[in-house]
Image (tube, rainbow, N blue to C red; front, side):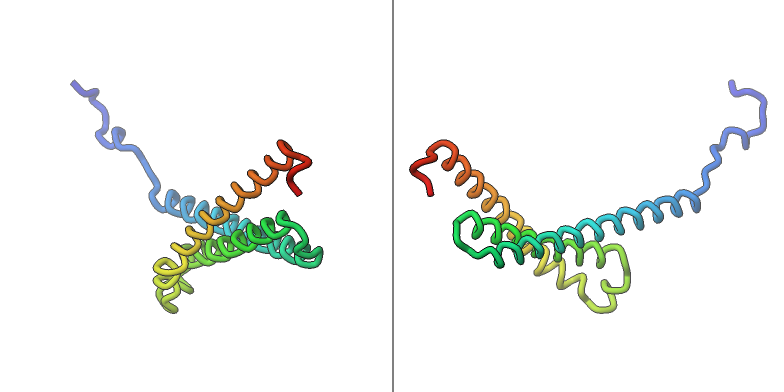
Length: 138
């Protein structure tokens, strides 16, 4: 039935420690990239808010873009904190930040994300009206 060879040749050699080291390394890289991306999004949206506030709230478009930037800043900050708490043990169990974050702030970030989607829909509708009815829309 089976070839007459050493039975140990049928076992597949697998280095579990190397697997877990690679997996941890990948997790660290993804975590760092996520925090960097959310941090950049926060900084960029704060700059957008400052530019539009300096320019003034003269049109409905400016108000819509500021509202969208505010929702994006809120979501970016909450997701940055989430990544930091999930991927380090520094903030999670010792400060109790993880429980507070996932109980109260995460659902509010999801609600703000939904609000941001609706604001994007309003901006799109406003732009559509400006193109479709150029003389009737201010």
